[in-house]
Length: 225
Image (cartoon, rainbow, N blue to C red):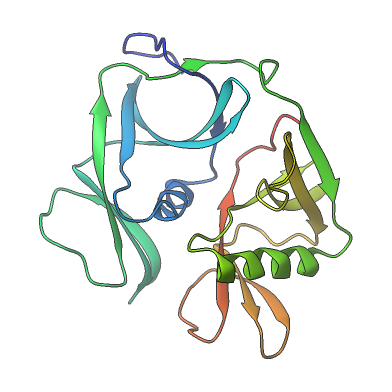
């Protein structure tokens, strides 16, 4: 879509479209308190932006287009209707189960868009044989750190892929660790049960006995696939 505002002159960025605005809300909720959402006008829509990984001089920016915006994004993983989000002007605090972030409308795109990832440092791909082993490793990291590593899901050719950039921190290069899974459709999270050692692909967060790894579903695969 044609950019309606002034062209950005900031950090070089590669834009990655998410499967839905719910995926963006789920992604932003991983930032924790103090997070906000950037929005820019794109033709007849608004584009919600969330900064992602930095690959050398290039930043991955995740986005989703919506028809209109409000003052706040509210994400509720455990609402009475299940996982949901809304754009609202309502003041006040949501319930304790919800995440709330202000939306800042920008008159110009803060990033300079790159058509490819040629400016990025090389991404090393490491495949894991067992997707459950990958999920358990991420869950273990989440127990040690305050913030759970980010998990991405997308389709590449005939494969459904799950993966993360955060398994190998000791490398100077970006490493994307991934596994191929049987077709799952879009899902909200991986749920790992330490008691049964089971991993499930779920669309809700109501079970307090498991560890949830939130998933971000991409509309298309990363360009390095």
